[in-house]
Image (cartoon, rainbow over all chains, first blue to last red; front, side, top):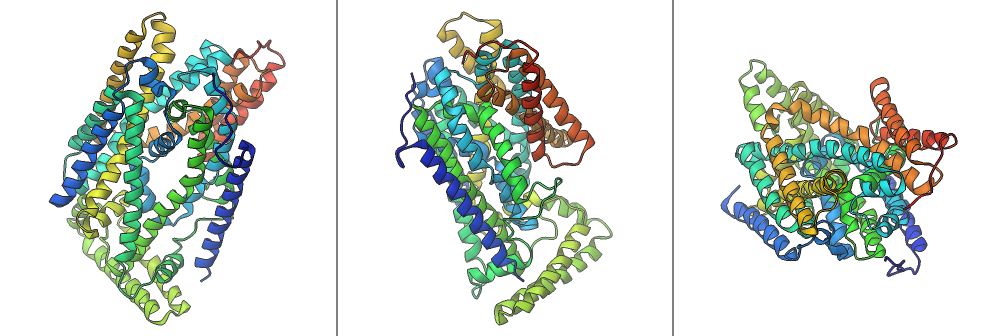
Length: 41
Length: 544
């Protein structure tokens, strides 16, 4: 029988998922900046 | 390749096999052979999932993609973290709690035997065709670069995979994947750093990025949308999410990796690791390709990277004119790049851009299709001794990790969903263990056998790659019905899968939408038609 274990950090899985979403948003924003910065010419 | 490179390559291969076999010495039951007795820690599953996805050809063509087209390919992975979150929240607990060996076994618990069998057969056809291609495709490139016949390369890679996959089952596959992914990480970072270090002395990293940007190679985010183009932010997010949902949630070659977890939490962590690490990994692979492009702005690249094709071209009468045009365009581009390094004047970047367009037109005029040879041509000609062996080991590792997971999952579905379910229901554990080993050997031999005829199947390879994208949408749709729509019964789900597949084939034949949208179309048709039919057909309570 599998038990619902809490994650090793951030206490709940919902918070972990939210952190991954935030990470994705930041990563896409950084990549968008990277594109804009090196394609200005 | 020099002696030290061959030594590094041979040592890596031998070490991987011995380590994998050592870690899998306790595989004496079906549960341990196919699911590792559900004992795997998250980090082993995480790297195994990553290694399974990263095939050799993705490794080779990823860098080439950035060299010829820029970094926009990375957007294909934007939807992956979203898919990993959804799968962690739904599929992982559902599969774990139902105690299944395969994702398709779950479909019988939820619907009925015919839905399970239909989806299992679709998987066997799709993955079975793909595993021969996964072995042959990198062998073609390695053959030209290493000067070894492709049959030797496919036999070597296939033989090694057969050895540890048959002997150690999923434990051997997972632990070898773990090692292979570490070698791939090392290969990516060593080639990126070496490509930067090989640039002319006065070139700084910002200079290199400015040149790559001027030539349109640094474009990881494209905001404009087109239905026909998969490389933009919106298609990457939505189409990429559906592709990742289908691949990681319904393809047994991936599902089996996280079914081995010692708990739901460990399996979730393995998927979430990929959600976090996959995008940066792909970014660095593409950045390597962009830096190789900058390197070849100062060092003249061959007009055609495939030496066999170049030799063929040199015997043609039009070769001299093509070569002269190419040489002149390269000289202009190099001069513009050097002027930029001297002056840092942004106007010189315009000259560089214009000269690059002339060079690309000259290369296009050759009609050569040689993108898969770009990276390995750079590696073998310019990288230091020892590093070449490491990169080759990474390419072999990428190929073998994908093939071993495919063979392992094909054997599991054949034994659990077909043999045990329909042909021999009440045999002993020992019998099914033997059957699992034999079917693993069969699928491995099948992959090697298919790859032996690869040279006469080039057009089939294109067809197989295209066909593969036709099936995921239907498979994803039926799993969405299983997880989220308890009201939908067996017959509506079965008919809905057939309707979804028909919709995908119609979209492929009648429209020009990018293949990434096939998954969205197929899944939506399955879900909408399944739910609509459930209002008219009686349903049974969900058992899973």
